[in-house]
Image (cartoon, rainbow over all chains, first blue to last red; front, side):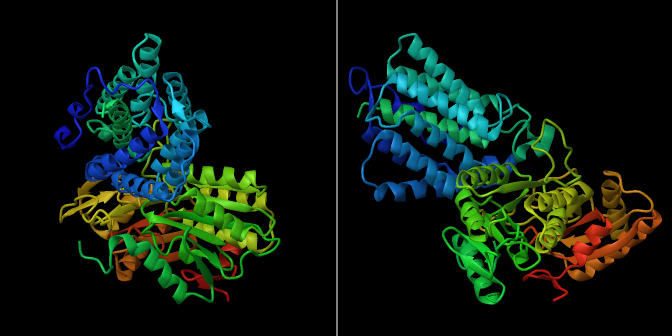
Length: 233
Length: 333
């Protein structure tokens, strides 16, 4: 199943000596969003397939509709600051995704937007604060904690690993990669879990043995962040 | 996939256009954001009721917009919750100054989207009371699940709550009537076949020719148990027992008995099932005070049905009998 993911670590492996950024620009954020929209479109069937095992078979369809709407919005958008950009993305997702993914991903991006309000660049400390706010917002909205078998299982480890890496003095790029790896481990760890939130919880024990689709789309986001912001292009 | 549609992505919008043309005397339809309001909205001084949810359950909710029932309905994509901007716009369109009740079926997406909408509306000074419907006995209510799903009782709640609002009761009282309906209603559903979400293009689940799924949700979510097909009599005994034992309903109770088709089951079978349900309830000395038989909360083309029982007080009976004029339910007018 994992082979279906078309963006392995090789695509965003570090290019030593060039392209490591100390900060992220407005254009980097635009590139992140465009790439994430491509990733979601590529993985639409895969996400929906994961969702049909334990949910209602619409996660990939809904996320793709939302990200396509975000792309349309970006095309007609005058450049602003990074915070305003993330807020626009959040509002667009809230009003187009529906389901549980709309409020949750909408809140995630709105909170990142609030944390980066007025900024033209993002430094590691800014991104740490943004992840902190995003995860807090998602948990407040969905009331999920670790091991409920939700996107929180990918996001919390990503947040914690990013902060730990920055505290240890790792480069921004290394910290982003470590965060993406932590999200992947968190996503994989959802497989044996019994769901306690969302439609999957109705299955009880039968939800065990399946990877959570929300944790998967969150891992894809963290992986795309690391890929587009460290790619060394 | 074999469906009478043009393109999967146009189904919801084109169905709304059909509703707009068919029922212009009763409702108005807004597009982007999508919602259906009663033709005379907002009704000044009346508590308004709105509901919403994924499409594919027709006539719920759009078919229940009109005098004596809902003021507005917000349809999402098929089986996907509508979005807060729809609910916010609908709330504003129906608010006659007396506040708005949001009727929310207990699904994670619906709950979160309605919460965001309520926050937006309250920040603009509109009073909103949210009522959660969670009447499905097939799901164990526990801290470890998202709780029971909102199913058949929703239809009865929209009728009874709508009548309470129509006779001038204030926001809090209308919300309390709705909560009382939810507390006294219980439902259990089953499926003979799966259904196909147009955008997905293939059946949500597989069910053998001689199998049935007991405790199914209205989106094809698995239920309690998959078993070999039984007779109508045996199936009703199984399901009605689960419903009756839940609150529990006891000898001497008056109930509204609602036999609901899932979309692909003919009325003749629903009457066979109602006949069995009447026998079952008689055996328990439970009196059917009112009934409703037909396909009112559906799951696309799924074959199957649900049984909803609602304990009826005198107030509920009066409110149920009150006039209603919507595309989906109409009497007394």
